[in-house]
Image 1: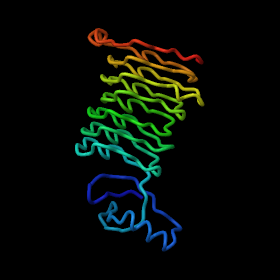
Image 2: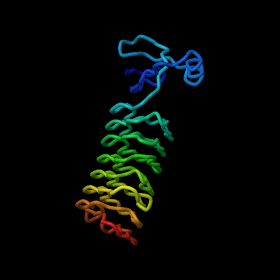
Image 3: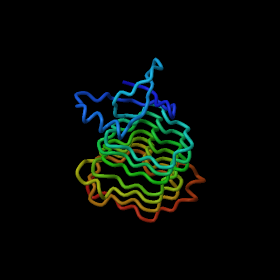
Length: 219
């Protein structure tokens, strides 16, 4: 089921809750008593739970500063929050999936908690203002250009990624001139792709701050 929240006019993906008892319905209604409209513009008060955020759904939104997603959210599609200004922090739920450029070009985005994410997709956080990133145990792949062009990124920490073999794809952290420290600790790294930590522009090389690159013990 897909529809539009009439209060915000943003497109979401919903899943109708089935097999819910009247008592459960009443309890859920008290929590989320909101009117929705379906694709044919008919209003409904069906009991639903949001399981994803569609492509371009909040692209360019400029009035949200903090995003904390419920564990029911499984999918954040391509460019869902691309170019969303004022968004400063994002907390992702466990077992979620994010699409290409999901949070790209968010120039105010400073803090991200990756939750139980397994794949950080291509350019997912490209050109954001993230300062530090901790790669959790769940991650098996950091996609092409995932954190590229993050001009204020200072530290990258893989020390929590010890359960799975991690692949770091091409240009994953490219053109991040403020990067001071990369720590792999005991992380198991399958592969580090081409130009993963490169500074590709001569002007950026002048700004290079790298002091400590702790190579992975297992690669």
